[in-house]
Length: 263
Image (cartoon, rainbow, N blue to C red; front, side, top):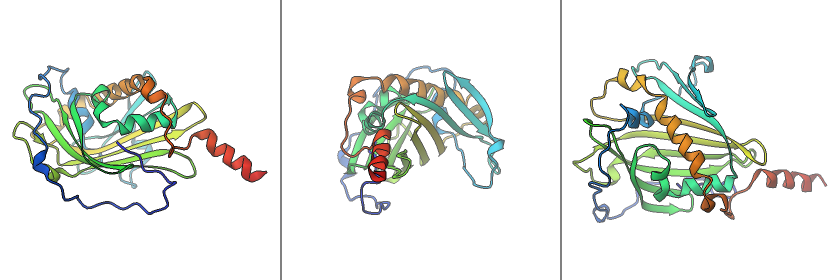
């Protein structure tokens, strides 16, 4: 997923679906043998939270606190499915974080139950349309999504933020998959100091199909936890650790700029 940075002067807009020949993208059948994951876990990245400003922060209930990853849930008015968020801290550079999010082909290595992802069209260095498949446990059908993603860097805090949402009608549906038509995902990576970064993740989605809400709520703390554990492992790879992107400002660069102005 590419990242949109504040150093760009132009105001960012939500682009219209580009005019491309969608039929040239092959259907992804049998990309991976269906595995019997622990009950319901692949569902958990696609539960349906609704983040309303009227809801009190105190309503969040801590469901899991393990290996530095905290997963929270709370009731949502008008919905049987609880909403979810998770947060953690990692030791990584903003360059490394940007590099791993831009590497869509590498999502399989850390996104839980991912069966494959590919770029449909790259709009710019910071905006992309892509397609991904999710392995759901038997007897449920696997899911797929078509997504638009954009990223940017806050000019004051240098936090890297991402916003991803479904554009399900951009690619023909595959009969072997249930298309997830509602998906809004949000990441925020806020630098704490030269080494540490606070990670926050939110999701607003509906996995589709006939999945009882109580089943989703039972295990809704596990999928995000497993994804973040793998993310922490993956970002240690040299190709991410050694990334040096010209359009990414690190925490120290912000302080250096302030010092130079003060002088």
